[in-house]
Length: 123
Image 1 (cartoon, rainbow, N blue to C red):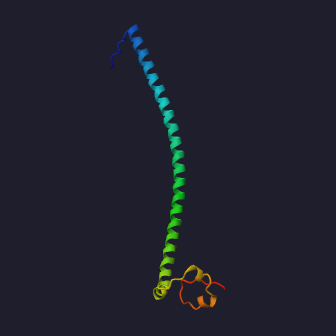
Image 2 (cartoon, rainbow, N blue to C red; image 1 turned 90 degrees about the vertical axis):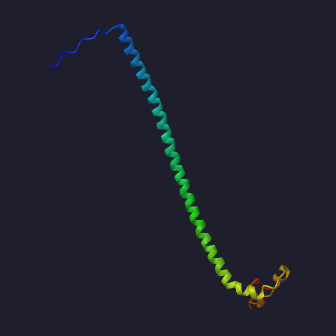
Image 3 (tube, rainbow, N blue to C red; image 1 turned 180 degrees about the vertical axis):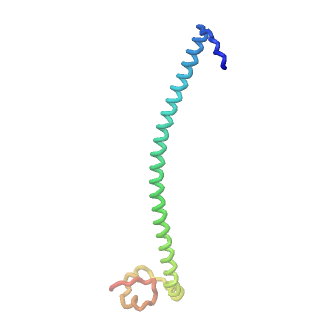
């Protein structure tokens, strides 16, 4: 069997100490509630920032993908141009066509494919 608990005297000093401890605990709880509310607001702001960041990142990835596609297409075009025009350029690269002459070259001359550097013009 248990012994009955001894009744302790509740003195004025003990009452004051209990009140002080209760006030201190209440103050700590109020401070923690304020900090928690502040952290919750920061979390909301961070979530909005992350959402905006992800949207911007998605746009940048799309732009990067488009740029990579354009780069690949341009590289393919440049390689094809070098394959098609390279031999002609080696053959008649010594020809220099001043712009005054190029603008007056008749279409029958350019259609003969004498040199690919000469644009086709109707004269």
